[in-house]
Length: 102
Image (cartoon, rainbow, N blue to C red; front, side, top):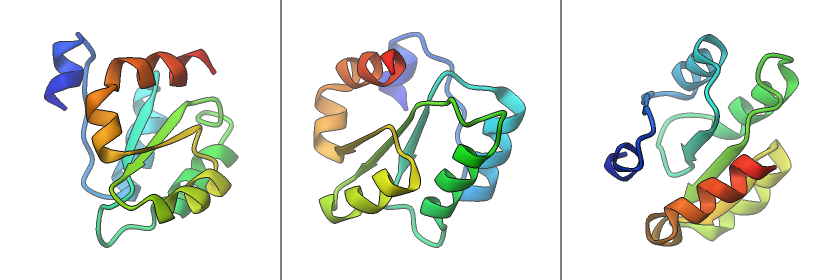
């Protein structure tokens, strides 16, 4: 989060998938970055719901995780880009450019 702020992005955070979906609809962000390792939330369903919603279906969604086994399900749900946690931190600005280009 601090790295995004250092790059002059406004950052909003959500504690649950429902909060993230509500923020996406209300705020109309340029991009969503989703931690797929968040416990207790159905992030795959939330990504699918955002893709089905006309107000949010265009949003680039970057799904990241320390567990690459989550990538196929995140992509199937509609994530624009899936990356490992370490790679995201190391190459954040490049991933932002790629996600926003789509």
